Amino acid sequence: MQRDITVSFLVEQDENGTWCAEAALSPKSFANGEGATREAAIEDLKDAIAILAETVGVPEQVTVTVEIED
Image 1 (cartoon, rainbow, N blue to C red):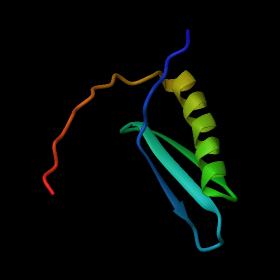
Image 2 (image 1 turned 90 degrees about the horizontal axis):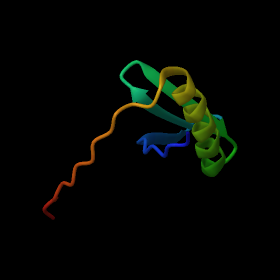
Image 3 (image 1 turned 45 degrees about the vertical axis):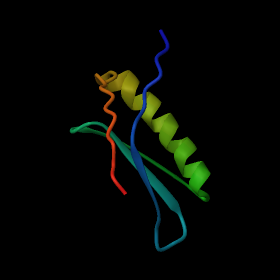
C-alpha cells in the first residue's frame, strides 16, 4: 500500500558548506539527509523518511488551519 505523508523539516548549511536536513516522524523517530545543495539534502531526507516510515510506521496526522494576523 502507498500512502502520502506530510512532514515538517529544517534545512541548514553547515560550516563546511554541506546542506543538512532533518525531520521527525514522532518524538522518538528522526530522519536526516545531507547533500551538496539544499535540494539534494531534501531528496536524501525524503529517502530517509521513507525508510524510517517502513521501520516505525506512519504516524497519525491532523490538519489544522490557523489564521495569522499581520
